[in-house]
Length: 262
Image: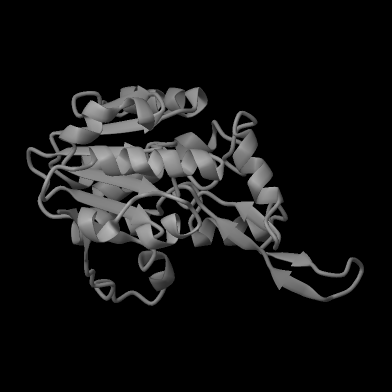
């Protein structure tokens, strides 16, 4: 592990001490409701805060489970579905060291910055001149500001407490826009469609980059929009074989998609 890896792990520990175990605030009403309504039992496990080893430890302590009982009282169990609204340390390193080019002098915008993991990793792993996090939830903005102050990131990171649909000028000047599971759990479908159309209208700088999880095709497939992907972006093929370690979550890496604006 590098010194920067250690710093990120320290940040994760700080944030765990300020959050409930599910890393969601009561103010996230819609997201909590959508998780509960999922056809199969699902729990939110923030990948930045809890890596697999940490989850294993909590399961051993009885603080978390990877399984649920399909018939109470029996031994018939199934795996819980985990969802995260943050990148893991592995995914963050993949993003900045293998997906994105040299960011010297570039402006990065993280839409729905939440805990700030993308911003903090961008500060440590890239030379981006400015990293903006746009976050609607005041509780998360406060957590990000706390971390920025403690770790002295203030010279290159700025958190904007706002709806992304009020930030046209910021999107227009961005060289890289990052969106990780950003709308599906926090907006209804009509609001999602409007937000995506706003993004498509304003992320128009030719040659700028858009990183999404999941793919644009998957995100837009359930929505009614006028977005013509072939006229807006071209997908850049990524190599997911850059890690040789056995415990790499290849499936998680393959959820990361990179697009170049036409």
